[in-house]
Image (cartoon, rainbow, N blue to C red; front, side, top):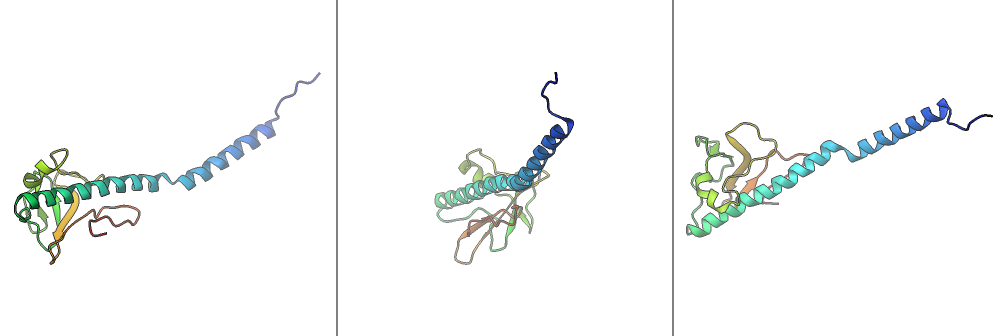
Length: 144
């Protein structure tokens, strides 16, 4: 009397098929791209939070922009930085208009100086906030 059971070849074939399906699904899902998309969604939210805070400041101050915003794109610093020709600290002016009372920081930004966002004003007076660290070839700014 023989008991019915799977042979070693059948078990091996099942494991191979499951492995192939797993590899195919992992490639199709592409976790790095998905993480980039999640970070980009956060960046869009941050860019518009900064943009809205600048406009609220502008409305409350008779059309005046925070000090340092010029026609040249400059990095927005965290509160601990020293303003220079390439970076500006607008945290003091904007914190009251931000939900968390602090400037948002890009998910990939390292260090304690920069936020990972830039700002400039066009000749027409339009403020542009951008996220230069955007992933997956996406452009994130208030101009788009």
